[in-house]
Length: 79
Image (cartoon, rainbow, N blue to C red; front, side, top):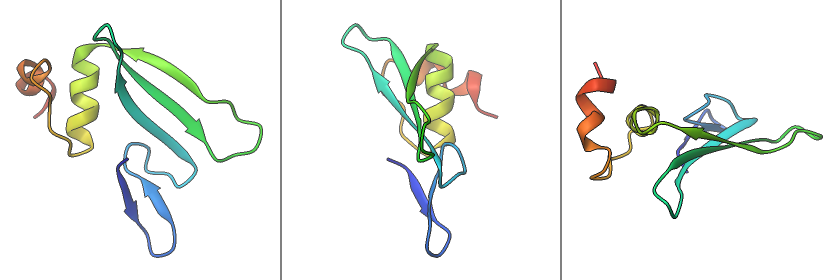
């Protein structure tokens, strides 16, 4: 899970927050989704289906390598 540090706190790279987090997964059927959760009491985790382009953008934004099935979107989603 991508994190950076701001001294004492771990900051989630995808969200820029120490309280809100995300991770990208690939389903057994090959679809991508992002799991969202928070450290705030009473908040509920949820998942969001994303397009292959959005998955590629998420991975590149978080300095992750693109898997072979998303490599074709690299030029489309990056500047």
